[in-house]
Length: 127
Image 1 (cartoon, rainbow, N blue to C red):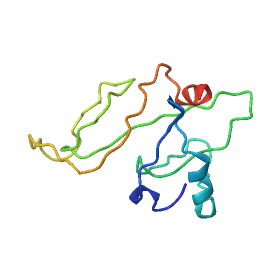
Image 2: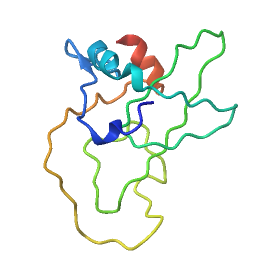
Image 3: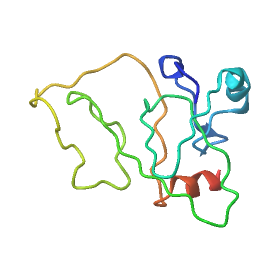
Image 4: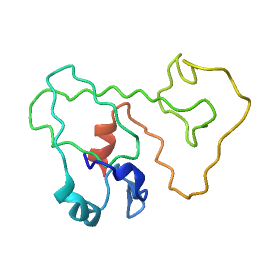
């Protein structure tokens, strides 16, 4: 991961009209000297901002790599694209009270592709 990168520009995850879930090689080259490894034992949890530049090495084993992603966001922030695999906890308010308001920021971004597979890794392999 690249510390502080969530405060910088939002980089495209699309290449030649296809969503790959990866930034361009030029972005990697620009940040490669700032990469910090975060390695944990099996069952470890990583909490990070969704815009943080991050990645992992390819899975070279014969075992599948599993991933569980959960998201937390402010009550007054609304998602811009649907969760491909919503759960019964989607939009569950865990703290505070409903405000009846939406917070808006002035910026522009590309929407991700709505996943057709249940695995983000399978989607990346297609790219």
